[in-house]
Length: 474
Image (cartoon, rainbow, N blue to C red; front, top):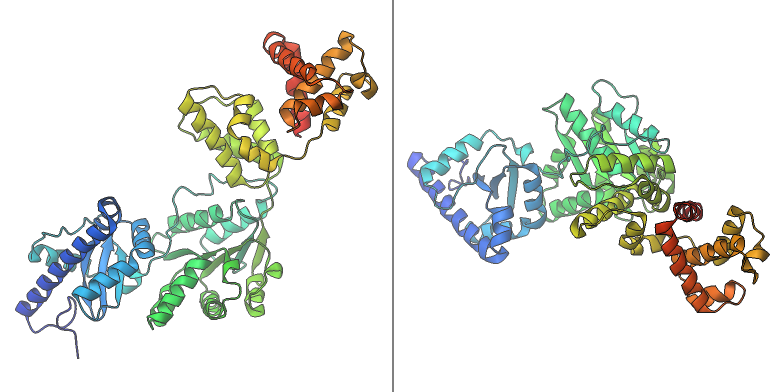
């Protein structure tokens, strides 16, 4: 039996259609009112108020959002609530789909039925496939703002090849590397470049975790056919962090068939993981074989030169008018080596804090601002290493540095070494004193204070300390 009361379904005439639409509008008003109370004014105004009613047919209600980002956010955070409230107002509703309709405005609760009918008629051309939403590609990521070095050159070139029109010599592209090295940046860059060449193309980007969640939701709703059609109809499918489906057998089954469909149809597939296919555990052998069938490109940790280039590029794109000296950039490039995301975050933090407290960015300011982060990355620098490096720098013997000699050519380097030991290690003053020939902690305090004064007054001493610090940091 057809649903004559659903907008878009068969009706017994214009009067019947109008009454059905009027009822739907009133239901939408009640759903919105309930969501406003349940979600709070701020959440409602930000995420739910922009939604517009498109219509309903069968067990589905169709809504529209002005942007893909908003549509995805609503689907991720409010899907259950929308479904529950619509089911209360319109028994039999099992699905609430959100389409992207650029340039739209939300249908106000007080809209007249005629206005709503016009909005629904305008939106009727939206295809069912458009109801499928995934995380959209982000326009801020492009090939132009991806900094290339030896560690990521192969991945970068392969990503560009996938994004270009015409045949590709490999499929899928599998990118792997630890977190924060640029895999996700490259995926979004592929999507943006692909759409620039083919604006009408269907591009889907989603994490493997989201793939799993949506597939299981489709299973529960007994609607896996729509899920399959949605993903397999795209021209470019990108799945991020595939390691998260390890051990999930039903998800892997669907993932395997999706891969096969995409590749067999000549569509493009990009997959990322935190390790190579050979090192992924808990994933079916046939999936691993299929992933390795295309091009596997690794992204290694950025070397010092690449880290420098990334920081300079990041600084050039900042809106804050804060001067960051070269020695600070070099310091960050030496100290933050784990991943690019953390490196850029460190620079953001320093610049933002300097602007907030209206202080110049110096090496000392940077150390203080990033103290917790630097501790996590700090190699265990010892007092012995500092003593050896200072003795070598001033052409002294270690025995001279630790002796009781008070000649200036020995005493000043000894004070520098004590100052560096206090600044660069967590050792206490008494312990530092003991390591310098059994001296009292007050001697160390005097040395630290004296070098601090000389760094302001004596350029040569300041340069010596700065150079030694760089040597020890490296």
